[in-house]
Length: 120
Length: 106
Image 1: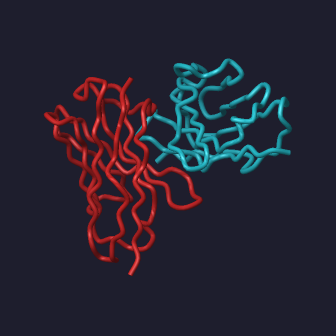
Image 2: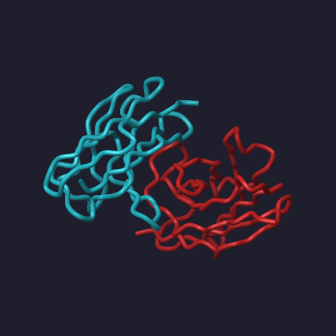
């Protein structure tokens, strides 16, 4: 059973950046792909991108290209998501989630979510 | 991008009754379709994958069907803990989600 534990809530100013972490335990981190999915208040789920930790290979959804960077430290089993040039519309809960293997798949495990609030 | 459309947006069901939720893909996703349940304040939880395979620990009252572009999630006898929002997600390509169906108490 894999557990994903995310960093705590953040409050940021418009134009700044945020970096959220996601630490995995209980599984083989290097056999998974780690994605980030966000959910604006009262809205649905939006996939942002994924990384294959063992390869360091990241892919980003078109809506976020140029503004997001996903990284991973395979030695500490921790993934990170940095979002830059924050605006009010980026206020959301950000989840990390994993699927087994490298090809697109269902999300077997989710982190608890990190609320990022963007406000002046 | 494959667009996933769920219907209805909200369904009102009495406890013990059946709920049927629909999900349509803008192009074929074969059987690469997952369903999730999200309760208020919680992360989504995987219910079904491969359109019809229950995830570990998911009760048999949850069932799924369909392939290609049309999919259905059926909850055969709603329990109090089943009142939640349900999302479909395709993984035939980079993942995309439907907008969700809220199952509320009638």
